[in-house]
Length: 213
Image 1 (spheres, rainbow, N blue to C red):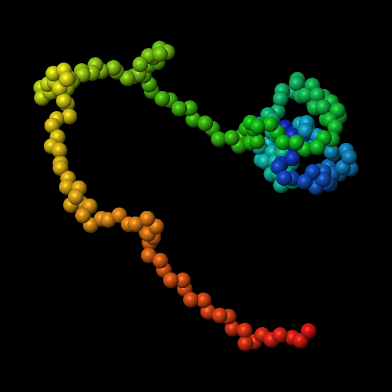
Image 2: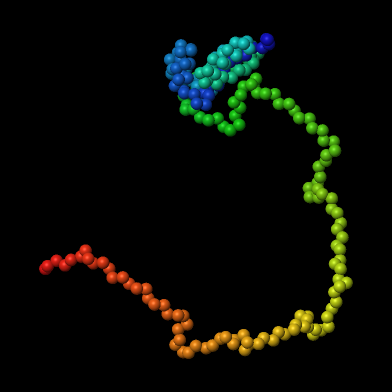
């Protein structure tokens, strides 16, 4: 167990989701003071409520306030010559504090106490073979490329005016044989066969009767 002594402060803030009125009632009962006198403890300013606590005593107090949803802060006791000035400054801030509505702390505000934060091991990376290149340096090695000439030994240049399309054999077609079965119809001849109209059945009117005028 360490011999260090700690001062316990109320941070003036509540845990997220904690009811302010319920917290004021708990503080009022704890300090035996009316709610209007203890509301300055939740005004957003740190206020010392216990001093020179051992580590065990500090943990018990903090666990109790954690259950109430009231955030606390522990600080190592300062030397005697500065304690009076610190106490006077805290009292001055506590007296001037006004009751303000709760607000979210800015992004990046620490939410853990110093002793609750895990120690971060420093990474020791050995980079003796690495170096920084100047701006604009080419990171990959440039390799010369050799263009391969295409093989044109099978090609030749034709004379001017030569027919590049080659000779095509014309195909003769016997149009008379192809149109032997065709004939020209007379003017006005229908091109499609006429179909007889479908018979229309007379409607059944046996259930109808005329009424006398």
